[in-house]
Figure 1: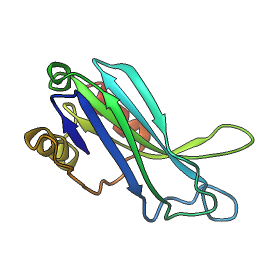
Figure 2 (figure 1 turned 90 degrees about the vertical axis):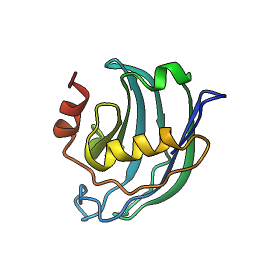
Figure 3 (figure 1 turned 120 degrees about the vertical axis):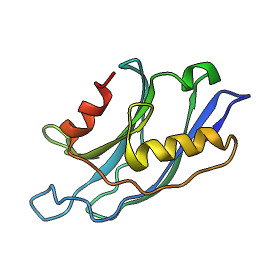
Figure 4 (figure 1 turned 135 degrees about the horizontal axis):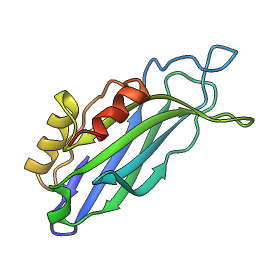
Length: 142
């Protein structure tokens, strides 16, 4: 992640995932990553990676930019990153999720804080996926 305060631009790079949960009958998954920018509990923007077929270790190296003014990024802004198993028929299921931002804790909060403390410098970090309901409860904290 990188934030450029003068431009009000947050850049998120989804590089790869490792050892994802098996979601399909054949023991694999068709994962993609959904990134939601959330402020005060409201979804502002949503972006998605491409779908990687039949893998539990997808490689993406995809970059996404969000416009968010410096005054706003310091207040109640969170990034919800969800790895989803794509299903052509039926509903695509979330594999796991993590939340980075002001409501986060542990390594997710540290990553966010390091990014804000080092403007214009990319900060890379691995994150462990949580159960989607557990991650959602983070967003509901005040």
